[in-house]
Image (spheres, rainbow, N blue to C red):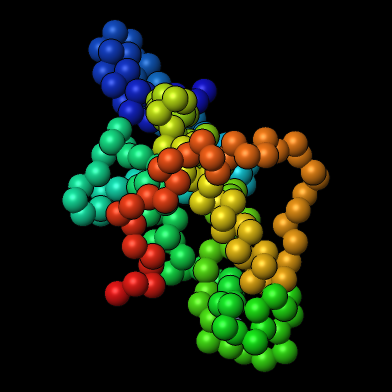
Length: 199
Ligand SMILES: [Zn+2]
């Protein structure tokens, strides 16, 4: 019963020509079932809904990108660009090292430090987009959301926000291959990406 209204629409003419007497009952019943199935929102989980919204947002970002950018040519560097773009909508105060509240989890007064996307939000966002990419036909090995540069960027954001906000993001200790991450990545600093604050 999850066939979409379009399919039903194209099927209907056949029915109405072959079974003439039943035309009205068929059309009314099929349209009724179509509307009833679409009115119950198929109980998508919040995660699924969020994932779909994120995927649409990213698609919109690609469409507005100058120069134009197609999903197939999208790289980890573009994903980083996207994440930095999102910072302007952030709601998490991240103190600069010059701020007297640097490292304070609960500052006693306001300060002019910038608002950013919290690391946790970005991390979850990337997870959803990585899944959505493959669900939309992308090849796992070409998944820009799984790119090493993205992982490194997220780790960097986590560490710097953890320091700036005085909050530990440590979860369960996981085994980390010690020297590999930094050493094996020559392209660690993406060259052509200015920080968002640069004018
Ligand atoms: Zn501050």
